[in-house]
Length: 136
Image (cartoon, rainbow, N blue to C red; front, side):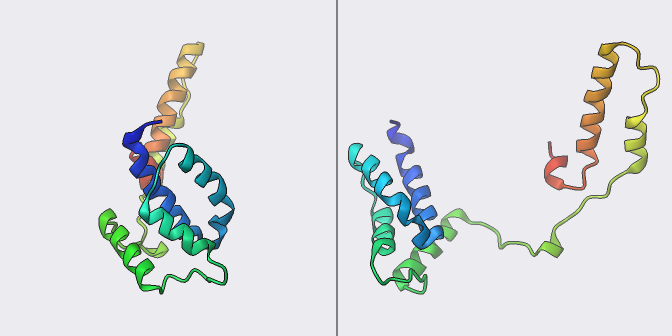
């Protein structure tokens, strides 16, 4: 019941409907029920769902209206082109750093082990080959 998030929610539903195409059809009745209850209308969503519900339509994006809408959405998001899987960066793992973090000498009390576990977890994140995990 937050009017300030409705446009974003409707844009998200529109994008989802656009991506799923005919598979989105099963969700339309429930979504329409909620939209009517809250008196929400959204031109883009209504156009896409009308296209999805149209009998005999194969929901191809070659339709000029749909193609323009997709291009506008991509321009608004300003996303870089997707990288090929071979171009993804993999970071080098430093075995000596992991070995040093793995060392468990002089761990006696429960607190010592908790601290070791915390430091080891941090070192695993730092040395991860995944850039996303390293950022943590």
